[in-house]
Image 1 (cartoon, rainbow, N blue to C red):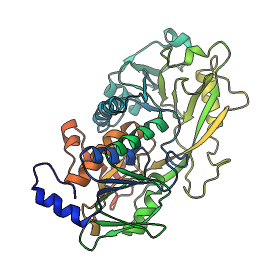
Image 2 (image 1 turned 30 degrees about the horizontal axis):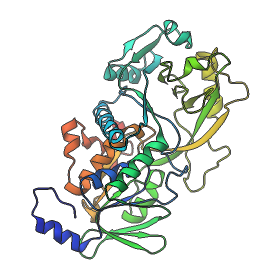
Image 3 (image 1 turned 90 degrees about the horizontal axis):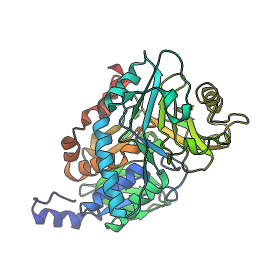
Length: 412
């Protein structure tokens, strides 16, 4: 297995004789791709396995835009976002191309909404008069708070970002394989783990990182025999037509923000960027689904109608709702009951040989490089020094928080 630099060379040589790989990463979405890159960058022999084609559209890491923001109601996330932002910049420098477009972040909602107020405090956002910003595009209700964070926010090109980390992982020596469905993980006869593909092929590694998104519960159940409460939701990515003459006003180039509306429904958006003349405005959620048998036609439920009503009330002069959204794209959230991540050793018979990253609950993509670094360090070192140095408290993300308490951190 890969060992810290100060460990005896003999230990590393012995590990190399026993295992084909130091780290096997199962699942090549953003988390797995970042973990493979982090491991390979350390000199570990990393294998990244993907069930579908690379850059497929069947999970949660595809598409053209994800937000990055400091505005979080829960205190454990801003340090991880700040760490991720540094690692995004490092990866852009290493690859030579850009995946992050800076943009302000607007948070708005009722002044009585505790989550909104906490998010504003965490980001250092300042209250603004929306009548004086962005051409008066927004209308808000009386009693609502509107606050803007001018720095640290932006839009990530999701598919391009995944491709970037996969390419960097390969550049650093990782083996990347798609169309390889993992159906089993077991303890190896000489320690470590044996990862089995549906074809019967076996891969022997010192450690394993599991980042399979919406398929996490199924794989953990079959491998470890217990239920990890990660529920997939079928979400819809909706693009709406911008009204004639307003197209430039809502672009990233003009300084239009990403925004999150904490009212009912909870709506979020990115500026017009990837599809000229259209803007992405979405509902934050969706109905439960089985990732292997989704209803592609109507699985998102009534989210488009809910978002249309929001647009008609809050941004009616700039966005057209007649006829509904111009484009609908399916995606999935992998929800935990408390909406907090799972970043932990699988435990039981596997001890610290298998690490799980899951349940990112619709808000994890932005933190992909940080999560990937943490997972790789946990696998290689048995602990995540980068997390500790960045002030990220991993105790909040343990699997055992659900033991005897189905709501996990939600009890607090």
